Length: 339
Ligand SMILES: Cc1ncc(COP(=O)(O)O)c(C=O)c1O
Image (cartoon, rainbow, N blue to C red; front, side):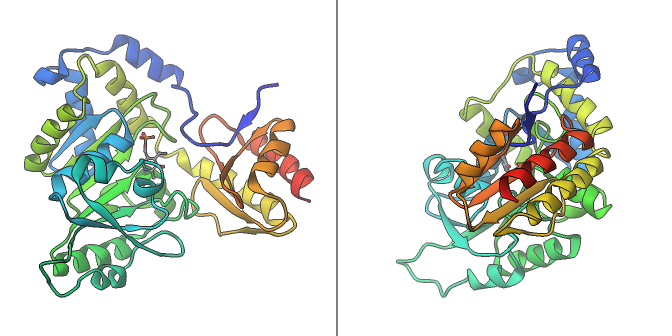
């Protein structure tokens, strides 16, 4: 039997309408700005995110790298939450590609507050480096898919402005945050400098993310994308999938959130397991008894794939390609393994 794959929402496959749209996509050379489908996707994404312009990039990692590159100068520091994706899973990208250093802050659910921002200001001295950029992650992956609300984001943006910092949102799952809150995605990025949003996670597109910002910043980002080797040619084949993703697959994320709660309840019944309240499609559980790799191995034997984020942290993620039924079966396996 095919395993129930809860390792990540990146494992989804393109849907049938997506494959059709990809096959029929009108294309051109996007390095010349001549791919009509890429242009449509960028315009649509900019509109949804409430920004002047957007750029289609091959991955979320590249979108974050470009944002950090265009919003900082070499030698700057970037204020980030300690478990954020940009520092945990994108190598030392910001240091290697932009010559900047992370300044780590701890936040229980992963979300930086105005206090974190203000605490990053220090009296100027010639021997000190300064923070120039704040990176938020919404939803926060390792925080457990936690959502940062509209007012919380606005508080951080206001504090960042007071301190003269720029703001980038790693919104790989901004769609999940918006659906969970019942607000349009643009409400969650109002006033920020740049936002990266992924099409290839819960939204099923095979490849691609969006970087959205002002027109001027996106022009700069286009150069940075080329520098990093991300200038694509007939990328309309991929952008066509992104358009189907944005237009038809966002609202259904609510199902993934409901399915995640089924898994969280099963995990919560396990001995020595701590599960944070589930807000979206990611469930992160702290284990006291067995190690996470050990639990992952036992679940695999029962046809359920999960992730060990570290020795004591287990993660399961719901998505388009796992049904409520699959999650109920996975919940039974979880109870058998942890019960
Ligand atoms: C929060 C977050 N940001 C960025 C990324 C990077 O996206 P990609 O895998 O497309 O490079 C991920 C990937 O899972 C993510 O979870």
